[in-house]
Image (tube, rainbow, N blue to C red):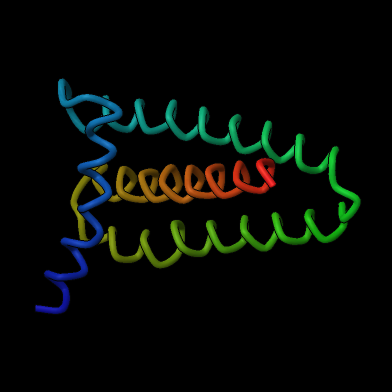
Length: 118
């Protein structure tokens, strides 16, 4: 029962991902779309990071915060989520992991935007 609940939780983000990428293809089309979405999210993250870095007097602290967040994202998506997703067959596990990276990166972008507004 616990594994079923974990699997459901893991698959929930995929429904939001599907809205972004459409539902017209196979898992490899979805992976390609996930790569594009992740690249776009990373560009957004880098842009907002540069804006905050240029405007803050606490550059070292901000840089350390970002490094800690990157470490968290790596361990969350490529560690725990990837291990759970390994139960999926084929390319499904890669899609789950990429979806995690996209979701967490977008959350960070949204959070950093709130810092610019202050």
